[in-house]
View 1 (cartoon, one colour):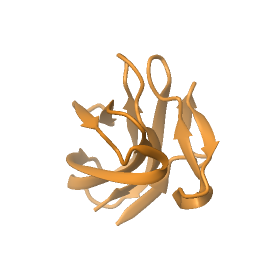
View 2 (tube, one colour; view 1 turned 135 degrees about the horizontal axis):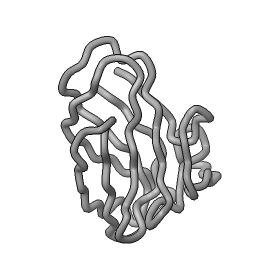
View 3 (spheres, helix red, strand yellow; view 1 turned 180 degrees about the horizontal axis):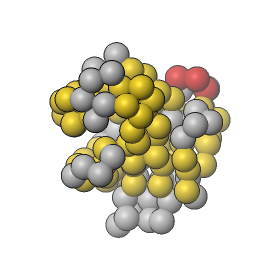
Length: 123
């Protein structure tokens, strides 16, 4: 399993910001994702290319759309309800193709607000 925290320094945040969150893993999450604001999480040293399960730990109060793209692959669109509180993490998962080596997973919603992202796991 590979786990990466959204607020890690190696990730790219264009307009998205780190938010303190005492109930989140690592005490922080990345919010303000949506519109022109994006989060790209760096996944280093993937040993073998192939299909993996991407687990996303996120927070939202209301129903929000999250778009996810791995490297140059297809965009996956998820509609996420969350736990109804920014202090209660929720999880969702999807199957993605992950290339070998270092790759990027991009989180965005060009049509509105996305949920806050706490961490990801690749299994």
